[in-house]
Image (cartoon, rainbow, N blue to C red; front, side, top):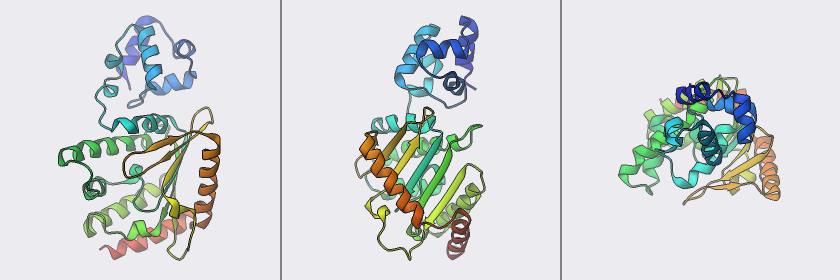
Amino acid sequence: MNDALRAALNQTGYTCEALAERVGVDPKTVGRWLSEGRIPHARHRVAAAGLLGRDVAEIWPDAVRRREPVWFRPWQEIEREAVSLRSFQSMVLPGLLQTEGYARAVLTGAGVLPRGDVERHLAARLARQDILRRADPPQFTAVIDEAVLRRPVGGRATMREQLSALVAACAEPQVRLHVVPSSVGAYAGLNGPFVIATCPDHRLAGYLDNQLQGQVVSDTEDIAAMMAAWENVRGEALSHWQSVDLIREVAETWS
């Protein structure tokens, strides 16, 4: 739990409901702030800290010593608050499902990060995975291309470990994984990866990745296009358990 925030609430007499009303958020949102690792949006941090008579760094120190790139922070805030996430990847596994060895191989093999930055980015990526382990995780649905399972990222041992971890993750009720088999020809996924988040207020936000940085998308027409792409890739994919069987089959080839 965020003991600093809880102590500040107790000392000032604020309830979650009262603070939420003053800050302009839902009381459940303030309740989530009390959970470990939940950091509010910047404007909400400043408003809440001011009302509680505290510095932002005192209540949310991780917000000050963030490890992820500046351009990624807006999406990470959305990802942290989302009630559901829909992710499509055609080249690598989603970051929320990557093992440490696989993630390190991806970050190193990309060749765009200075050696000293790899571990910092790796730590940030692994820390993000906490959202799937918390008491109220988002519903996470991922669609990947079969080629992702067969690309030797990090070598045979790394792939064997990664696919075993993937099978284990698929047993969790909040995780659903679907694989687009290699027999499928042209489909919307060939246009690139994307993620769609459903926020607590039911708004949708999208995320597009490229070689330089990511882009948060909120325009209505752009979201509609991403939803259409999602329906296409999901429609071409195997069912969850058919996908798990395929992952197990491919894992054997990495032994």
